[in-house]
Image 1 (cartoon, one colour):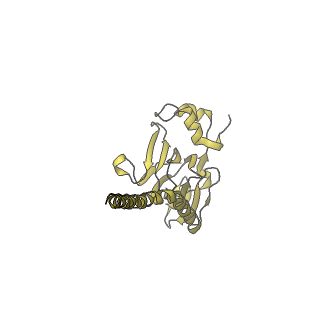
Image 2: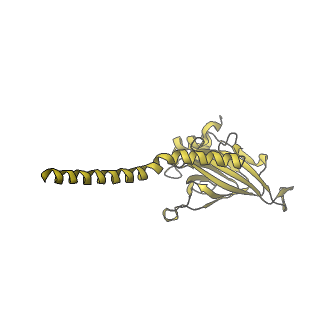
Image 3: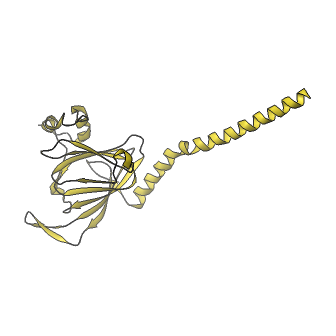
Length: 211
């Protein structure tokens, strides 16, 4: 009788352990596979959207097109708008500092979040986060006015972020400046709690300009 009772107890313990093992494997399995799945998804997007590495600024770019409407800008005819895909990944997590003449609006398609560091003349430096956690201040659209500098950084833990960018008027290579130097860092250092000289230098990255 005593052996039978112990036997039944062992069977119950074994069953509980088996159920717990299945529960743990179900809980841990997706977490273990998640980085691989996200990396596969990023590569899939790069391939299907025909994205290529953007020189100097970094990240991945895919040209979509320009609008049919035209406008006169500084005596030249430009399309009212151009559209791009843009993507950051774990391997290329920063879009380095650059200045654009056109307005630049970024719309999150998938992934994220991404921190935007924006520097507009006459205003304090500001940080906005592109993402879907609305309760914590993230937004699915970030609009950067023309004539400002900006840099983007994929949040730690995020695998990738795919955006659609609209530039108005259209992008042209002669209306962008990439990188800055010591004078720019001195101008913006301390303009926000995160704007330390070291971090600003990180945002400039390989495009540091010598005096």
